[in-house]
Image (cartoon, helix red, strand yellow):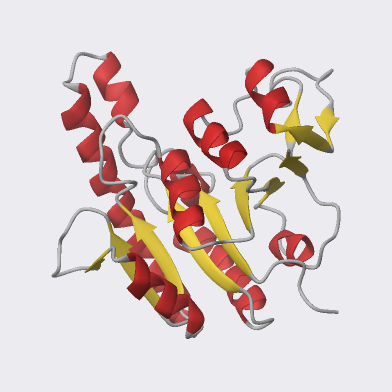
Length: 237
């Protein structure tokens, strides 16, 4: 059976790389994510990845403690580059050719983001990890994921989290929380569900780009989503 999606944008939080640690990158977790990506690459799915930086530095938290917001956000963007390089290393260890494309130029470690070049990498079967968010302060990596997905003409954004979809409340804190199988963009915005920030959701809504929120920690889940199984929560028009 052919994959349900031909080109995807996988959104990972920085925290996804932490595993059970309080900080930083767990190499075992990075390897597991890399193997999941390799599995869908072998099906011919073109894969772009946007990764956050919250496991190293969170701009919003720093600005809440008095740091200049733009400066804090730039520091957060640099944290995403560290994560992107770690993921690139993990992917190449399992035999997947990978390019890191950064929105903030630093030619010694990654290539600058050029849309047509990134599309070409995808067409050639390389995984492209997009680093440094959008390159602008005040925008989250969720918004960067929506933006890059549009630019790459991805079929879907797959948002990997530590819960198996979108709930009425945080299932870690509220045992009565129930899971949604499907939601509209407007539902997400009206109910203030913290899937992705409002800018990212609005961007997806304007361009009719579906979002699947699923549990990345369950091995094989990424493959199940690609196979078209009902995994996690689907957000569409």
